[in-house]
Amino acid sequence: MNKMLALSRKKNEALVINNNIEITILEIKGEQVKLGISAPRDVPVYRKEVYEQIQEANKEAVNTEGFAQLKNLLG
Image (cartoon, rainbow, N blue to C red; front, side, top):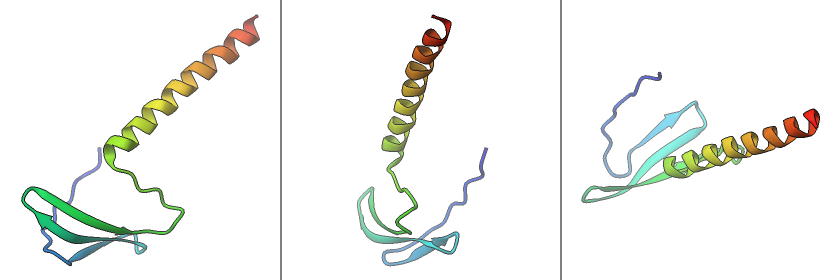
């Protein structure tokens, strides 16, 4: 499992990941923080819940397609 680095940032402060991804704190309202993410176009950026849905859909597609292909092979 990966380790988590916890950082404190204020509005308009940023952090850099891998020399080419910058995350900036744009706004803080109560318990909600608005982030700005600057990353190369070929780097996908998802909210975690969306990422998890994509992963689950991919697993289901592989299982469904894999089963259909196996069934076709076995006749």
